[in-house]
Amino acid sequence: MAVGGQQRRPVVVLYERIADAINAGTYPPGSTLPSEPKLASELGVSRPALREALLLLQEDGLLSVRRGVGRTVNDSPPRRGYEHIQPLEELLAARVRPLLRTLEEPTDFTTQQLLAPAGSVLPFWESLLAGDDAAAVLSQEWAAPGDVLEKVHPGFAGALASAQGPASSLLAVLVGASRGVRLTARSSVSATLLGQRRGEQLGRAADTPAVLVTQVVRCAEVPVLAAKHMLPTGAPALPVLQSN
Image 1 (cartoon, rainbow, N blue to C red):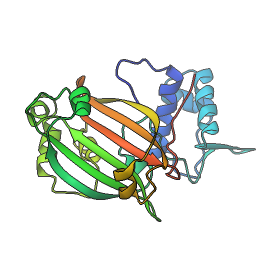
Image 2 (image 1 turned 30 degrees about the horizontal axis):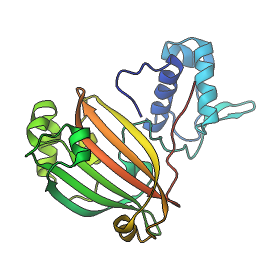
Image 3 (image 1 turned 180 degrees about the horizontal axis):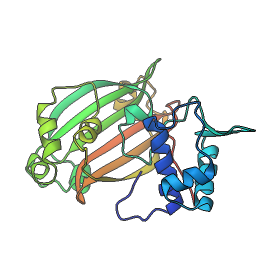
Image 4 (image 1 turned 45 degrees about the vertical axis):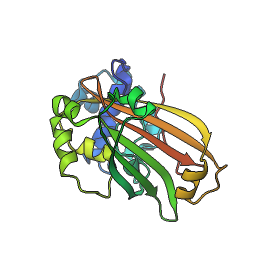
């Protein structure tokens, strides 16, 4: 996931450009990439940098090398990882089952993460993300107060006001309203237990081990969304891109 202010290596940026082209269908599954000299010329990069990015794409399962043919796009490229700001239901290929869509006074968590002042009210969405068999993730999301959203991201404020209990996440509404708007985010991951209430919601025992992902999304350096995602044992894997 992109973190505001963090400089990414040129090869990572190049990796993203090619991966985005693959996901956009510029290089569809089964197609062969242009030769290295031609592709380097099209992208305006050096061949050594291109070769390194192509090797990373090959390692990550997006490309394969076929003797006498060249680099081809795999038929089933892996889904993009959590290093990108995207709804969790898309990343995990899960359905959203709304539990609660309401307004809530600030808690210690939202006061700290969203800088919500006392007396304000925050949109709060609680959802289950369900796979084919059973609920896999419990997601809790809060948006910043309405006056903050109107000032820093009026598109999100409008989309949120017109949303009527949709079968999507709050982050999906934010991303959908952010075409051309730069978002940054930071997430933290910790180990925990589900506890009684969350265990009941997920149909699991209270002492089930789980991963807690805490996420804060910002627009113009102002926090506009905070979330807690609880992934118990057996939940789908959450891919994260790493490079050095």
